[in-house]
Length: 323
Ligand SMILES: [Zn+2]
Image (cartoon, rainbow, N blue to C red; front, side):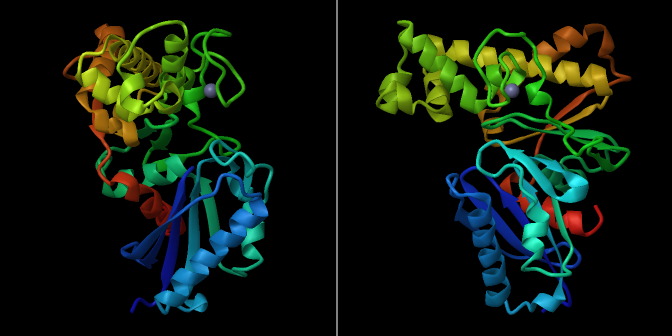
């Protein structure tokens, strides 16, 4: 039995992971349950409150021994206020004072809300692939892309707590597909998992042939697993899609590097499982642009995240431990 407990929560677009930790940040138990994207914020946080309380009850961890609740959300968050501005995958969770709402149930227990990528960055920095680097970028490459920053060993949040949304930097103004951010032509609109399948569907509609339609049953069902399978079989449209993703990822890495001069990129998120077929060409594009800037004195490291999908809850718990 631990003396004090910490709860670490990682909210995703389709599932929520919830971990109970001891006060040194070691996981005691964890559970996962689905998230419902159609819920209003009050209902969403009522369910979350019930799950947290359920976890405490099941483990015999009394509430008075709870040191804090750390919560990573896929949201723009005003960090100091624990206020959610908007959430990419859970669109109804916006303009909501989440910390104050949770505090109605968990009175006097510290609650820290942060962006999910930033929580994962904290975990990778302390316990994962970023160990030993005083500056690092954690870049999830998944349905979306972003870049949480650790600078001088600390999370950098920016003036309003919204730093790291570099996936929405505009690279082709007004050109390309409309992104959830409201603009056309951001990096994400060209190379994220959710957007690349929209490009593929558009190419199919304009008459291009691909085995992805067969693999998925129809064009609507195509996802990144079909893309990877089709690429492996040499499908021309899959090759085109992966080339597009690699190209914009490489450009994105380069622009982040020239802006921040951070030499450690930790790549996380589901699409990293595609491995060298996606990241190899992206790195080559980075090197091409970085040409004169690359030398043995100034290496740039591209590393795969080590903590997998547990980084979110581990980092969320670490938010309570004072990072
Ligand atoms: Zn965008």
